[in-house]
Length: 292
Image (cartoon, rainbow, N blue to C red; front, side, top):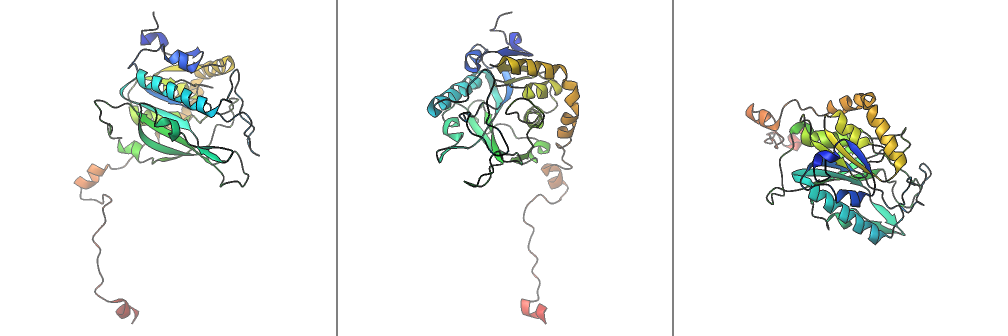
């Protein structure tokens, strides 16, 4: 089977450079993706609670302009391979370098993607508890969208997913040897909110690390494509995939949050409260009459 056939890539982790590997994957072939790239933190940023982040077999220390240019290229390749109407969830964070703020929007707006939403990930813990600024407990998740026929709005989310709001509260994984893992609930929420009960779709993570996105895809009944440059993390991810059944409880806990008792249309049909302001009922007594 040749690399030009998407089936060649399914349910495996490719050990190699992210950008070079993406260029080999056929266009319009993937349904959805979730990733968190290295943040280019210089390998010297640390706090009282968290050690400086260093990845196996790769550097997280590039000139910022080179880093951002690389991210634009990676995201544009992902845009090419994702199907029209598909989504990609991109986890990153606001950084500071010598007092200057570096925002992911600085390079996201240079890509082909439509930025559908910025979601706040409340990690509930700060890496650095010094007082140079308010403790940073948040990261960002960007919902990126590939439009169909220039329709930038796309389809409406089901109420059971939309009600989870744009602030997601998860603690980072604490028992994961990877230096910067996001929790399994995060990619489960991304995938399930878009694809719902559908099965056998194709999910990609081009910086798959310890395999969290891939495990989420497998638990939800989908195919996956992982790319990872470091052999130790490839081995770690494959071992985790082989034991994914052990993480089913996290899947069930997340799915249980995607519930709505009545939709907007059902409340409207039944004449129930739909969020509009109710008519204000004025008491005929004045303030002074009430006082008496």
